[in-house]
Amino acid sequence: MGKNILGKNIIAAIYMVIGLALLMGTAGAVNKTNADWYLHLDIKAIEQGSLKDLIDHKTEDNDIDKVLVMAFGEHLKEELEKITVYGAHTGFNDFTLMMQGDFSDKARKDFQQKMADGKNHATEKVSGNILHSWVFDGYHSDDGELDIDVDDDDKPLQLYAAQLGRKAIVVSRDKNEVKAWMKGQYGLNELNHEGVFEVVVNLQNALAHGGFNFGKEKIDLGFDSSVMQKVSQFSFSVAQTEKTTDIEVGLVTKDKQIAIQLKNIVNGLIALQAIAGDMDEDIQAFTKNLSIEAQGVNVILKSSIETSEIKKLTE
Image 1 (cartoon, one colour):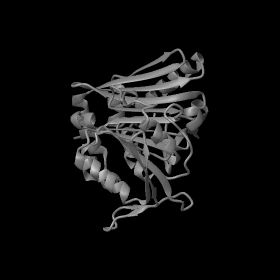
Image 2 (cartoon, helix red, strand yellow):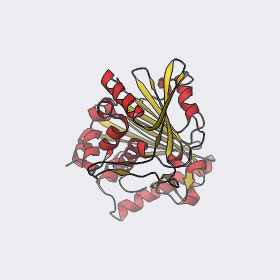
Image 3 (tube, rainbow, N blue to C red):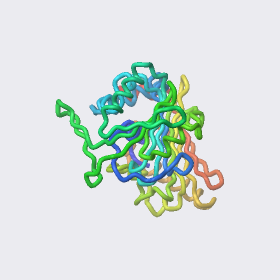
Image 4 (cartoon, rainbow, N blue to C red):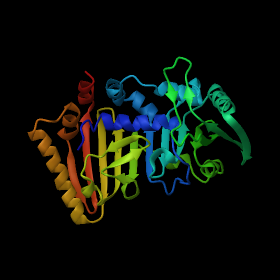
């Protein structure tokens, strides 16, 4: 178990989602049904719950707001409620981003203008709607505080986007995936869940030396790679109630015996950290009410953290 599982891992995932305007790599073809990784974030729910203070406390100064305004406009940034991203095992080399909210006319016009201002902007009609395409080859702010370079053999990114009514905007490296959303082949209800945060990774395709690579960022899952090679899927979700923040981590293994072994390894790692006095406040809060169960081929870690404990972590 890596340090700051409650703070750093959530925040890292949030950074990955919001930073999708910077994605780098070569486009391929991945759709919602065969994606190797999936991430969903309910921004509105987080803003209204106890996690907001924790994230604000853990987050250092960053350029996320600037990136969103640069890519989609000020009004859309302010009205954004949910973000979902999914893609291929190559990390950010292939992705689809869905932004949800009750977007005003100003936000939608901002978005349209941002598309129109894009390099080599073009449009086409799909099912009575407008499909935008443009080339992103980097961005450098006038004040010099925000520089975005395309790190793909200096090749610019070809991007596609469309508004889906007033409630959603889809952006993708894959033109056919945007068209699928425009034609109603997917529904927004398939993306929305009860939790405020959820990430799922199919490790057999995505695992690389015990971690998962998103562009230049590597997310260390905290386990020896020989063990993790026996795990086919990793999931992490967070839900909020008025009194608690509930965290669940799931690991899908190859068989029941491996699930039992992995459960024992996790228990051992936690015990070693406790004995060594190497647990920071985040880990202590996570492990205080932690249960670890092997259920068939699955290993399930559940923890419920009281709102009062969350507040202590922000002091």
